[in-house]
Length: 158
Image (tube, rainbow, N blue to C red; front, side, top):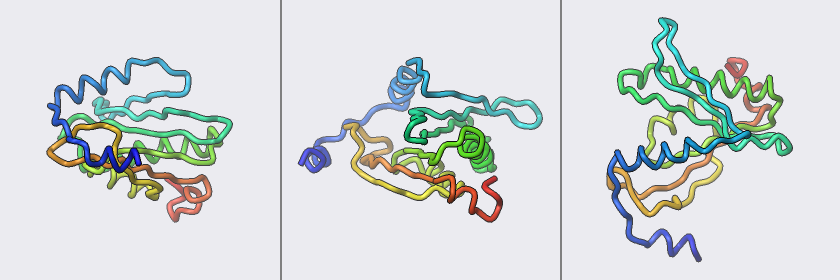
């Protein structure tokens, strides 16, 4: 009942600046269940970062994320390559059973990148936030890929 009620609540629009401020506040919290790597081009230009978080060694899974903040780096395969390297590391080197990622429906680039990496959508539900971005109500999407799915890919998982 709570989800149905929440879906009908008024959505509060926020600015990009407010969104970034809230995101930065979340990133400052130290955690022993996460790790971040910087992404550089072969020419040495820093273009973003990837990370894993909510690592649960006992359950054998973690969530991953990526940020490529500069528009001139979008659509060039950097995100897919960086996430693929991280997925491979987590599943092969760390021995996790599953890697997950979560985003919202308006993040078209992340949805496309996740699918290119072989993730399958596992859940979709109204986002807990009561605001929208670009006027779109948010739906949270979670994706997952298992070690066996990763290793069975024609490209060997990389």
